[in-house]
Image 1 (cartoon, rainbow, N blue to C red):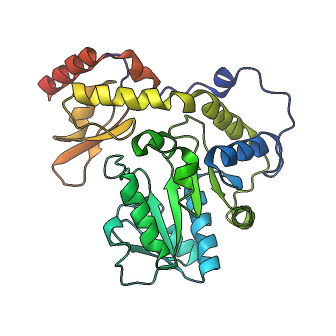
Image 2: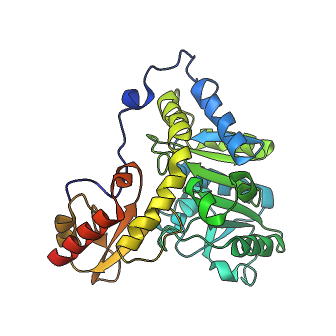
Length: 321
């Protein structure tokens, strides 16, 4: 169990990129690698434009603030497990004066409050990186449209969701009014995100990026690493997703929807982490008070593991807990 199964290996920027291209750097978010990245993302997603943003949290705040301005409605509906409700220190309310409400996906059409924006997360990380069916996803969007609401996609892990949904990126993104994607999660970049949508939405978002403090003098290192991820990691995500099914089967677990899945066990998180080593990585409390949770990411290092090797390591791990 000395080899790493779960997670990714991030090389240093210079190791990953090799010789730095002879191009002018960006300046306050314009031109250079940042401009090239924005153009590339818009092309991949099939949108009119895209905007580089330093963090995903900032990208979500900007998008929902823009839609509140456009709809004249501060109410934002989202699943009770949505990222802004649990990982952003109430920024939607504190910074933007918005009012997030908890609405299960199945209740989008029957929610008694007149929300102006619906946020959907694909896949649902807190549920274990679970994807909806295509029919479910389109029905939720249609239900929001019937209420004259706009729909924003939290697509932090959208890149690897095309395989489970069975649809290309432009078709998925075409359901939504705007989308956020991450460069450091699945694409292994050093940081950064993008907002994509219509040209006028992106121009409005550009203003709010400045207001939120996101117009850094230069961001070319993050942009170059993101471009590298699009060139080298994005084409491999299909193999990661396929091998995640092999890994899960070897562990006797349900077939995952993407190359990531959650694992919940009873026991002390510290003890499970100690026993796991590099096989599964760290565990943390699962919120029940009696169990532990980890997230398994099947990326480059895991491709070296055969199903039999995973099964053997899993059996050894279970014998020690």
